[in-house]
Length: 162
Image (cartoon, rainbow, N blue to C red; front, top):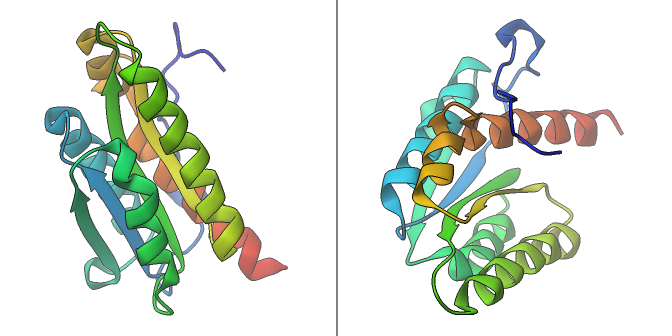
């Protein structure tokens, strides 16, 4: 779904699943930190609003988005982690590096979902410009960290109900 003209981060706190018993891992890229910190903040806000205790949110930093899948895998391997949010930001440059990093992050995160059977959310901005990244990390198009946390809570709730 395209975000143009949409603010997709709105949610009603009363509609969030109760997160009081969940343990959540968040792995965050240091690269483009101004955007990843903003998305981390959005994700934490939702988790705390849903009742996830602060002590049940484990955050670790990795150098870049390419390293997110491995960091997520290490977190998801832990028995005390129910799900993981991967937060990154890749902005197109002058070379094909953008394509390789975005593809590796997306496929790697998908694989962690499949290999661990735990929900691992893709919260990686893949933008052409810094302005687009800003718009999606708390600007006019919302905060993808908020959306990833809402999605994670819904997936954890689904898993609990099955």
